[in-house]
Amino acid sequence: MNTKLYPPIFALLFGALVWGIIWYPYRLMAKVGVSGIYSSLYVFTLTLAIALPYFFIAKKKIPIWSRDFWLLSLVAGYTNISYVLAVIDGEVVRVMLLFYLSPVWTIFLAHSKSDWLALSSGIGFAITNVMTRKHEHMTIDQKALAIWLGVILVATICIMFDRNTMPTLDFFTPADAMIMMVIALSLFFSTLLVQFGVTQIKAVEASSFFLFEIVVAAISSYFLVGEIIALQEWLGGILIIAGVILASKN
Image (cartoon, rainbow, N blue to C red):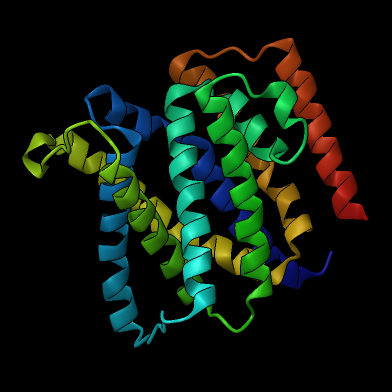
């Protein structure tokens, strides 16, 4: 393998690692009364706050007034919000399998709200990766900023139709604040690295490395919350992995 591919491959695997375990802190926040929409809003606002000093120190000027920027922003925003809502309410591995199954067998497998969220999030993820690869005129920092702003924008839109009371900042304990900071830092680094990886590797080939997320999710969900993978989920996972590998070879 070309050694030049090692950095983008590592970047994709790191992103898969983060997203394979990030469901757990989101669930912790949900248990204390912070829904996925509000936790996403707070966490990505914090992520953006972390990014601004980075852009300032690196003297990065990020143009945001373009159609491509905001299309990527909206798609990525929905992808992230629906993913978080799915992993909070649904079984983690099942959500991951439906997430990567995305365009196939939707009508046969989607039975509950979390299933539909996982499937639609997977479709959004695929579109996001294709757009990231296609928009070569956009920098990695610009694409990352689009994603962060997109989640904030989509979360804000969702809140307009949400009946739950928005938790104020004094609602959070120091432990909650620490959880949000860990998520935000993880998202800051993983977003930049994933955008770098997808930019360097074709979207279909990149999807094969993202499958590492299923492995991480399976292990973390078993040890953290005791979720057991059923036989049909094992079979589904094998079929999905085989399909992605065959697609990347072609």
